[in-house]
Length: 527
Image (cartoon, rainbow, N blue to C red; front, top):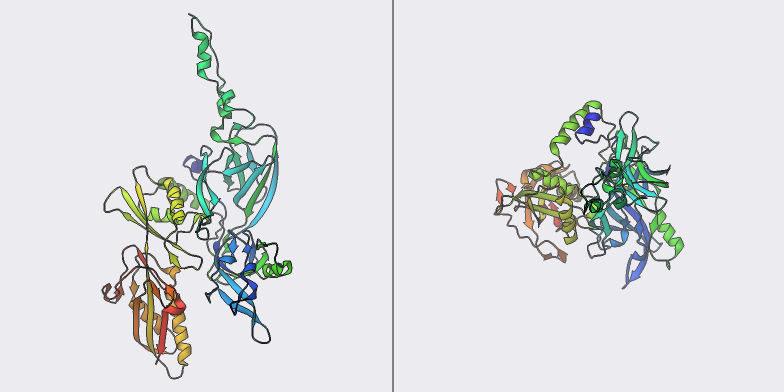
């Protein structure tokens, strides 16, 4: 532990699993222009902090608000009829919100009463396996912020975004001055987390602690002799340079506990809602209906929840100390720029894919191409507010001589048309549906990267694995651009034929392939 402190490494305890869930609510139907549609007045927001449970009983919490009012009701993947009356008329609709961030653990509170001034005050939370400190406030409503080191007097903070891209970028990143701050320290022997505050005395101004040397020199004018004057070196420790220490107050601490390998969960294992808060923001609506809609909130995780681990061993900590010291938190190679961009907190906007390379015009500049996703999960160019947030975020980690150009990546929308020969013992329609589902999984944008080519052999293998397929007679990949069949695609033109070599379709530089509308853009025929 002493070795870790000397080299700037902070050991941690258990890690919590994180992942995504899809959320669902059921809203009443309404009539509009002769059509029965969801009554979106009741499509409110599930507030962050909703508690979920896995089949094994592990607790998870949502990290951001889930706003169902932004759902595109024309998308059949997001809206389905939930119930009909005896005449077959829809009376309720199920709305689906995709990609809600969750994290294992449970939020708790504790209170500390502190007395007179004490430099480097240390307060230990009397509970094991604290994952993170969420909020610290004193009885005067001053908020204390966690920093990496006490001399760090600014942090990244978010201001609610009121712009048109607020759905994709909920917060605007700002630098915030934090005179009230603390660092955390984890004790690997008892698994307890402590908060260590600064040395500043909030009851005394810095000017009183460190006198103006000019004032002390005034008595020297017109004199041949003078007496010594003294400065108390202890006063320098009470300045606000290392942050203010809480004095004669009560601290309320909100924190999350849990973690460990047991918090990892397989697909479709997190599907119980134990506690949630629903808000529609309209007090004129029927309160009983609002309550019913809020109670209908349910979730399921399409993919595994991963990342949980138990405490690090002594040997693991020993190895990580050396690795941490060598890294020094800088961005040096292309992988560093990509990793740092993708690590920006999602509340400032989500960087879906990133690619970095040295600029051809300036060897000291790095071109960072980024792509984002919209509320429907489709790849889009990053909103301007997201780029601004990213610029501020990575500026702290870049080397002084580095210049960084943040550019938009390109999106190549493609459509797939195939024909298969089926076994006479199989239903042709069922075989085609299974083939389409297999191609949806293959072209799921979650598994595609910038500059990744399409290997046609992989598509043949994917279709050949489907039961009932005897052979694949045709596979065509085409580029979709602009408006097609009342659907909107990217403006990137890509000649598939000219960019196909040896059965591999190559992407444009800094572009990603995407099947934007899988239900429409993947079409198959069985013979």
